[in-house]
Amino acid sequence: MYDTKRIFICAIVVAFCLALVLSSSLRRQFWRTLTSLNPVTRLLLTTLFALSFLANWQGLYFWPAHANYFYIVGLGITCVCLVPIVTKHRVMSYQYFIVMSVFLFLSIAVGQGLRNYYQYPESIHSVLSFINPRFINQVQVWLLIPLMYLTLLAKRKQKHYRSLQFIAALNVAGIVATDARGIAIAGVTAVLIWAWLESNWRRQVMVLLIQSLIFGYILKLLLIAPIPAYILHGGELDWSSIRLGSPGRIKLWLEALALSSFWGLGGDAFVCLSERFGRPHNSALLVWVNWGFIPLVCYLALLFQCLITVWKTPHRLTRVTGLSLLAGFAYSLVSGVLDSPLSQLLAILSIAIFWASLKGLTSTHLSLKSKTLGQTTLLKHIVIIIIAIISSAFIVERVYQRILSYPDLVQSRDLKVQFWLGYNCQVDPISLQITPK
Image (cartoon, rainbow, N blue to C red; front, side):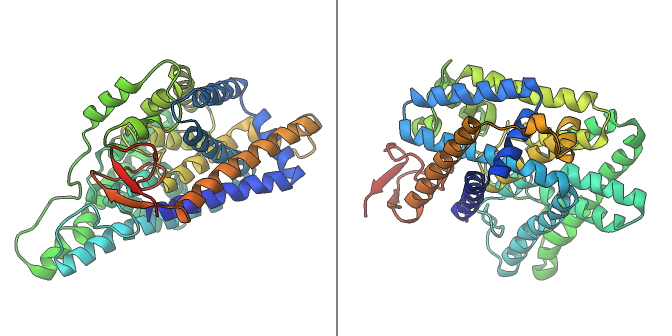
């Protein structure tokens, strides 16, 4: 299931890269979006990707590092291409968020219902479509703030308010049922910041937050646990939620700090050098280990710039989309949010929606007669085409490796969850013993 979702994301990225190769108008639009970004943002992104490439070039695992790097570049290409799309279809994007929230809740509720009916023991696999409830939480974190925003808009328009209020409570029910403390802290903190900054909506935001917490907990009791199990089989009420262990964050982070260096070890360094884990469950530490200290500073500076924009902007939509982005990246500091496939898709979509909400970018895409930004030289076209082709080639090769050249795995300890579920570092004999077919 994990690898299937990864293949789905790879297909989307390759499709956007190929569209960029084949369409000159899309390349011009791509360049307009990049040049419309804040100069500081462009400088930070350029420095981040340039020094990351340098770290990969002199890294410990040359080809895996570049495969990982150009996959991320492909995600970036997809993100930039999505900006004009979500500018025109933002409402549709949020409607998809509503549908996703319902299905994520059903993944938990139906999985727990089947477990209760057949009286299977509690496990992290007691959910549908995901191998671990944390992967559900990593998708949910991008949906919380936008859904609350839609709910408040619906209340003002007196249209579908109760339905959206119910869906907001479903998100809380899923978070409580999976005992997801990281997303709970990140989400509630983002909502409190929103209420503090949004004086006109402060009361409505706080009321909706309290209602969602109360009704979400009630829905968890009634629809997930413990009431359904009590109705089916009787006995004592089991008030526990899904967690069943933790990877030990402190030990994991100390291991990542021990591997960190100024210039970085190159992509895939952590998954290959770590004895047990595929990722440090901290996006900042992963950047530091793989790409070095300066890319880490650029990464944190980009997040700080987003926070400043949220703080200073007079536009409510920019504030809401920025807070949603910050909630997701805050959760990535204690979880593998930026590594999991569906979460990566929601991350680049959230970034695109945030960029589309910025005044400069919006005005650029609404003004199609802008000749200055529309001028794209032949060299720029060639560079964009080359980068898109290289990204597609690395992604296709990695998928080909997974589908057609996948070796037999003999589990000696634990399969590492990173790009794929296991078989992430072919040169690492510690966690996997690889037997060729």
